[in-house]
Length: 100
Image (cartoon, rainbow, N blue to C red; front, side, top):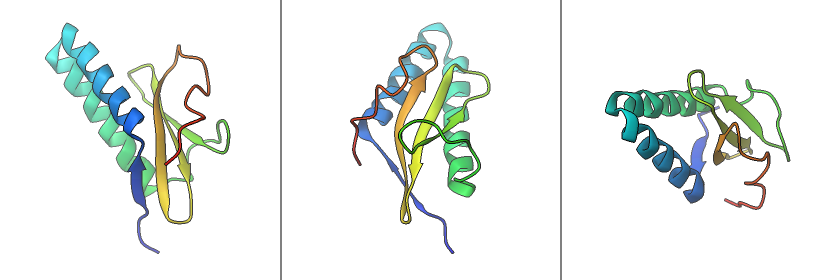
């Protein structure tokens, strides 16, 4: 069985960009470390999507190690849908109305 396709919600892309820009205000190096960790997380999810624990509304979540964010995603037969890059301090499930 081949690797599933990754489908990232446009608002999740916007959240990744916004967080990267916020970190860049402090340090370009920190912004790059943040973005690298997000990319690594997405790659790990692609490789082993069922590894991370169940979360809300049929999703799973991958916690970033050094930053207060998680990647919220859902696995289907065809794809891995990324719904949010959720900050740890935001209210859980704010992204539930998003559809891919």
